Image (cartoon, rainbow, N blue to C red; front, side, top):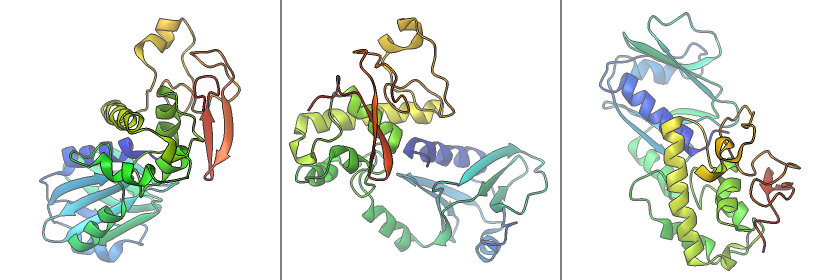
Length: 269
């Protein structure tokens, strides 16, 4: 499932390509046909992202709420747009570009109040200016749930997925099995600040890189990581490999229905 940086990057890309245009809107697959007909020819005049939720605003017509889930894909292209396949849930097009949405968990036309309700049930997002980390801290500081599970709970922190969860805990030497209530406020503040920096870099480069300059392949004289997720990381999907810092073996386990990765040597309880 895409992490929050991907959704914020998609918001930027939609605004760059379609913002201010009268947009042709269609649903070749047919599952969004009625809403597409209401939006066709209207101006895309706003975008928003919160966690893993993308919102496309259309003049006087509400918002298209998109959640990609596990299988959703977004593909941009330059005009002229090719004939769409019948797997395209939503196509936006203007004289210069098009974008196709396939396989999302959610693609629905919603009102302003419905959009506000979605924001209200989500936790603060490190990529949303003004979101308050205290909201997350109030949940974390009283919880017996592991910090690893809390970071993946979108009602606590929005936008953090499996990669950022594993990497930020490693970067701060926090054992993923520590209960939220055992985290100090200073540790939480450092984690939140780091998430902001890491995820902004993710938006900028459209990939996740989490290693510090002194631990890059060039600095350490090691081969670069080869993985379809791209980017240099410390522990994510590096189970049984040697830690870049202590040389110990990276561990993996199932936690909250996702694979957890950590280094017992660098993340001691």
